[in-house]
Structures are given as structure tokens and as C-alpha cells.
Length: 328
Image 1: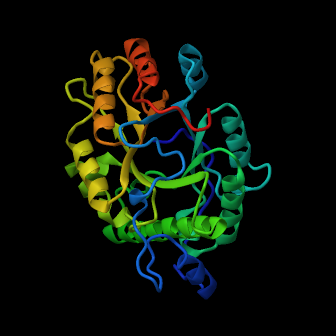
Image 2 (image 1 turned 90 degrees about the vertical axis):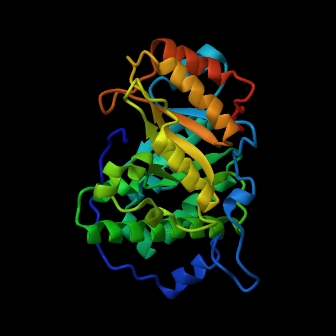
């Protein structure tokens, strides 16, 4: 799901990693070096990690300040950028301004950007991404970064060859982002955490007929700090911990990457909404889910937190199992 913004036109070109880019990629976690293969990111803590037995909470949408004022607690805040690599401009580009504002407010900015899968996969943006990530990691507070959320959707319903090529480019793009982060930080990020955002729908029988298989989007061990999922349930009769969520959780564990949720949603008029959100929170803590971000937005017929469901969410914000954001 995306809160709509402008999209930059993307050119298609062959994946051609230069020798210089290949050298940078060798610095990436998950790429074997002369000493051996680096461990998956899930085996070590990452910037902003709430720790075992705790979960970070956050939202996308316009009620973030209201939630915080009602509870006295700070949230992670997911913000979407769709204008291409120009969003990463320094020092006054849209992402840089948003990060500074969110960190000043005590929140974790969860930046969701789309510079262009094919161009990122080719190495075209390595230098710009490295400069941006060096800047972000030098800040005293934490930022979470997603580059191209819900990539499966970008080729939905297209011929199989197009879907597979898009997934191949996505994997390469993620590897380039991790390589840029490692090059910017000497392989030891202090304040930037990078992960993926996929759809649980891809794991359903319907998704399987329209999308590339989910394993084709996994960029390999050591690239992501967390494998996050967008999980919705418009059906009042079903729990949020439905089969597609269970399959996604199992997939994260198979990949050896910490699970998380980048979009969670029930309908505002769902009579079971409050109990479903409460149950999912309890499950997430037990399952060592790193963070849960609610899609508090009217987009796609509406997922806005309202009434008892909003009250329950705010109660969960003050639960002892909810981690304080490190930026508070």
C-alpha cells in the first residue's frame, strides 16, 4: 500500500555492474570475502533494535501526533517518497528534511523511497546513496530505510519473464544499497537500519498467479536487518495472524532475518478490530517481531485507526513490552 505521491519515470537498461561497483559490493554484508562469509544481519543487533521480548510501534498517516499526545509516548513514523533519486538530495532534499524533523520530534523516521529499481540495480546511484547514508549515519539518532517497498506489485499481472526480471533487478538493487551503507560506515552502521518491505499477499494462491515467487525477492543473507511485511485483513471473521501471515513469518525465519511489519491494517468499522489488533500485538511480542507499523490511512477504502481500535492501539503504546524509541 502506498500513500500516493509523484513517481519518476524509470528507464530500463541491462544490469551491468562496473568493476568499481563490484569492488564496493564485496564490502557488503552477505558477500563472502577472503576470510569467509559474513553472518546474517539477524544474528547481530541493528540500530534501533528493540531487543528480544519487546516491539517497536509506529504508524503511517496523519494521526501520529494525536497518538503521541494521548499517550506521552513516541512512535516510529513511516513516510513515503516517490520522486526518484532526487528525494535523497543533500542537505535539503525531501528525505533529509523529513529525517531531521522526525528525529527532532523524538520519532524513528521510517523512510520508504523509490529511486528506481533498474537504475539502482545497475549501480547508477551508488555514489549518491553512499553520500546520503554517510550523512544519515553521522546523525545522533536512528533512521530506518526501505528502498522500494512492495516490489512484487511493480510487475503485477505482467508476463512471467517480466516478473522474474523485475525480481532479479530488485535483489541487485537491495545489494547495492547495503554495499553503499557498508562503504559509508566501514561495515558498522551506528544509526541507520536497512530492511525490506514485502506483501503477505504474495504468499497466497491468488498472489502466486499474478506475482513472482517471494523467494525471488530475497537479496541473500546479510543484506537486510529485517524482512518486513504488509499485512491486512479486511474480513472481520479472520484474525490478523492468518495463514498468509504465518507463511510470511516462517519465510522470514527460513531466510534467517528478523521479522517485522511495515503495514498493518483492519477496517475502521470492523467490530473485531480492537481485539484483532490486541491479539496481533501479543503474538508479535512472542514471535520476536522487531516492529509493527500501522497503516493509519484512508487510502484503499480506509484503514484509519478509529473508535475502540484506536483506543486499543494507544493502550498498547504504553504496554511495558512496547520499546521506547531510541530517539525519544
